Image 1 (cartoon, protein in one colour):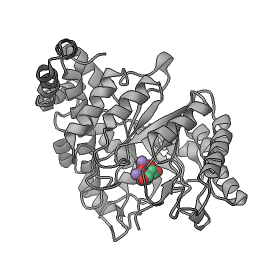
Image 2 (cartoon, rainbow, N blue to C red; image 1 turned 180 degrees about the vertical axis):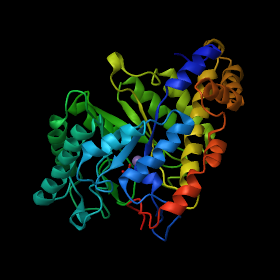
Image 3 (cartoon, rainbow, N blue to C red; image 1 turned 90 degrees about the horizontal axis):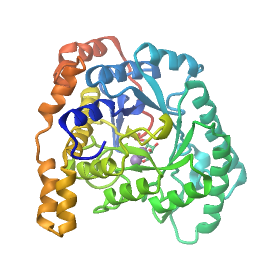
Length: 395
Ligand code: PSV
Ligand code: MN
Ligand code: MN
C-alpha cells in the first residue's frame, strides 16, 4: 500500500488499521491540581474493557487495549484476557510502571542504589510474565528517571545502569515479544532525563537487538520538533515500534490526538504510509503499534476516545490520498509549490464521507459518535456504576 492508491485500496487499508486504546483513558484522571470524578467511570479493569468494547463496536478498528501495571493489577490475567475475548477484544501492550513508588525518588533502573534497581527490574520482569499470561506481544517502557541538579549523579553511570537493566529484560522476552522504549524530553526530571530523546532510545535499542524498538509519544517533544522526521528516520532504520498518540499545546498535555494540531498528525501519518508502516511486518510480525496514550479530564471519556480513533483514521485516510506520483514528479523537477500543493490537496480533502462509506461497508453505523449516543451505554453506566476509579496518576 503506497500513498495515492486507488479508492478501493485506500478503503482496504483503512479497515486493516488497528488502534489500541489505553485502559487508563477510561478511568478518572486530572492534573496535579485536581482529579475530576465523572459519573459512570469503571471501577475495575474488567469494566474498563467493557467500555473499550463499546469503542471497538462503533469504530471497528480498536480491537486491543493496553494495560498499565499495577493500575490494572488482577489475580488472574488469563481470566482478564478471557473477559476481553468475550467482548471481541484482545489485551495489548503491557505498560510497566516504575515511577510511582517512594523508592524511585532518585530513579528506578538508573538509581544509584542497587537494591532499588533490582526492585525495578523485578517489576519489569513481572510485566513479561503478565504478557505470557495475556498473550500480549509488546512491553512498553517509560522511565521517569533523571536528575534535577547538575552533579546530582553521574550521567554516564546512569546510562550504564539503564543498559544493564534493559539487557536483563530483553533477554527474558519470548521470540514473538518486543520491548518498546519510550523517550520523553523532560518531566518529572528537569535537569537531565535518562531517556530524553529518540537518539538515546535508538542507541539502546540498537545495542539490544531487533526486538527492541522505539515508541514515539507525540506529546514528548520540545515545541516545534519535526516529529515526522523522527518517524521517517526510525522507519528507515526498522526501529519504529509504535506511537503513543495524544496532542499537546505546551507540555505532556495528553489531550485527544489530532485535536491541537491535525496537520501534524497528517504529516506523521504520511511518513508512516510513505515508509510502509501501515502494513504488518514480515510474516505477520507486529508492525507499528498505533496506541493512544491520553487522559480525558474534563470531557466524557468514551466519546472522547471514539473521537480520537476517528481523528487518527481521518489523518490516515488523508495520508493515503496523497498523489504519490504527482508528488515525486514535482519533487524531481524541483517544483516546490507543486510538491507542497500535492500534500496540501490531500490534507484539505474532506475524508469523512469516505470513512462513513468504509464503516457502512463493514456493517457499522457511518457516524460512531452518534451511534454511541444512541446506544444508551452512557446512561446505563452512569446508573449502574458508583465510585469509578482513578486512572492511576495525576492526583
Ligand atoms: C509518560 O508521560 C507516559 O507517556 C508514559 O507512556 C506512561 O506510561 C504514560 O504516560 C501514562 O499515562
Ligand atoms: Mn506515553
Ligand atoms: Mn506522556
